[in-house]
Image (cartoon, rainbow, N blue to C red):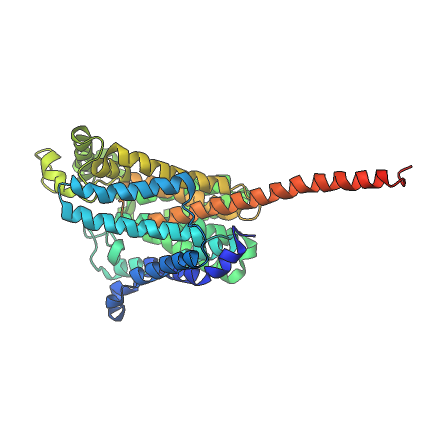
Length: 429
């Protein structure tokens, strides 16, 4: 049983819109199908989901669930971002960035209010996995046809997937979810086959991106999933097959680029990260509490970068990005939010009914956060969808545990009452 059966029925349309949003995020139809471009499907579906959820709550006079400490931390984080317009080095950029962050916060709140049962969570996760097939095929097609390859050999795709690193981390998070469906017999052979295809294509897309952070994040995610999955031998076999496929089919350029980690001084991409981290460090010394304003990191670059760093980069680390743009106050809020969602995913892994999905989500969270150390940024719909699913898994597991505890408490009391009635009737003699 979910968090609230009546609420589930009332939120069914909001759930459909939310699932459509998750599909649109990965398929990005407006970016490659001209007729969909003016429709702004991501905005429409997300606004529809949030609006339906809010209207139904107001219509039934039900309170909105804010997800406890982690949800409040996210709300404070978004509020601080909007307030940073007043001290930003580029107020216009900060204003637009903060509005986008508020939209993503609304998506997170919609997920935790609408995804209130294990079935809904599985459907949303499955939709994300299957939709990623379109993204992976797009990346592979562009690589095979040589379309817009970064540095002449790094594959990417349209929209938010135009950066190979961001593409790799967003596609990589679906792999543990896909293999969890694949390893579960109850999923049915059609879904298992499709999830196997999704996992294989995602790994290929990550390899073709030549993203070092994406490869590390994927390795961490699969290791976490394999060692925490109850069917450990089966999990290790699935993980081993992915590794074998990677070793056999990865192009030589993939291994060559990963070998450059030890020679980062000669790698322009790696040095860009070093410069960005130096800028974040200098901003934190100059503006430790509140930073330079959300979205303003690159615009503060000329004031804090070393002389040899003539090109402005993003922070290339979501935590340093938060420190630079919103200071340590913002970092505290973000850590509470991210840590709460991650801890919730790991806690939900113990649930008897949906633990298999909780273990997959916790592995995705681990891999995604590792990628965030190399290529993270605040405005990522994938981040808030993943964190929202993890928080929902935790909420559902907690509700089920509380319901089970109440049943256990009632049974002994009933038993004692029946025993007393039997003894007082005189039949016990």
